[in-house]
Length: 457
Image (cartoon, rainbow, N blue to C red; front, side, top):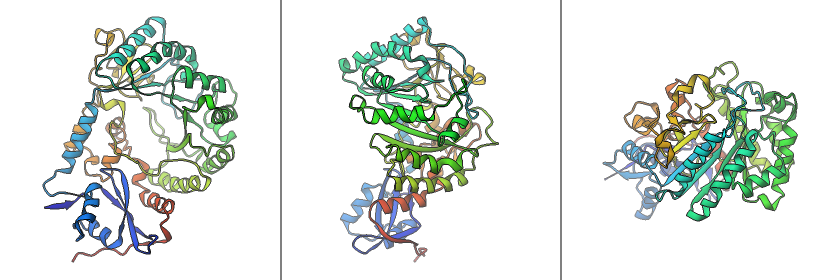
């Protein structure tokens, strides 16, 4: 016996396929793939009825895990997968803070910045720990990130430590990734080349919060200068530079009440500047609490989702790259849920969650220190507050356990859940508009029409 999976999102609209059939789109969240199905089949799936199809057609639905064994406990299956992913010790992820300082004074930032860099004794301890992890026989995949503060304020530290780590990539044959999260104000083509070639950084995540005047007001430099055009010029040069071809860029825009009306202008301007490039991907995110009160400026979830849907359409028209829906199931939703991941602050404190370092009232949430015996080798970090997150959802303690998006989302942010700020991603609130966009991108023609409401036989 079989049943219909509850982990699916079916478009309300129907579309015309090239052959003339009316179809609806199904986002199968257990595999995070979108499938067009005939309207009659979609109606049956919506009612929880296994469609009367031939075996080949049913096999397609089984492959997308839309049809599953009747006895399967789906939440238990998803929980087991998340637990297995977070228990994987072959992949390790370390985020390093070269400095505790930032040259910007963004009002929505919850960090406290001090002129502290990774000092020599702590730096050597970090070098030993990361090297030990990279050389551990069990490690096959390594991700090393540079975070802050503003990591480029500690550019010399990045170069120094990279000289120890980069040779180990080839020596061990590691599956390697390295991300720098930077405000971009200190970027130039020389630094980008060093990051890409010498430090083996594979991706740079840069925040641009609007066109020049808006961005420079929303993300002011403490020196009183501006950064918009410096960022744009540096990235533009890198996109034309073969020496940096292994480095991709993520352009993130943090949106609140002060810049929501400037996003269209920003996207249009960046498209005109050549950012419609295969190495650039855009993401627009709402400002959220980082242990600080942003209630006066943050956008309501549905309001943001409504505006975002229009921004996605504009990005599509401009040829900009972006993620319409998650293309693969969530695995490790964040460093906080696995002991394979950790963040090392400039003072040597080790954290499990990326939103804890440099936040004064969360200093006592550190799980340890780089000078402690366990940190001298490749041992896993001690347990943090959120390492039981998959089990918590699996026990039904969070609304995620009944959400059809859970396999694709993973719960987003356990810290925000426990603080009472539901972090549900925007695609939960604008899924229909995203499916309309996917239909357009895949040649499903005709004006979308609201599908007839299915009725039980």
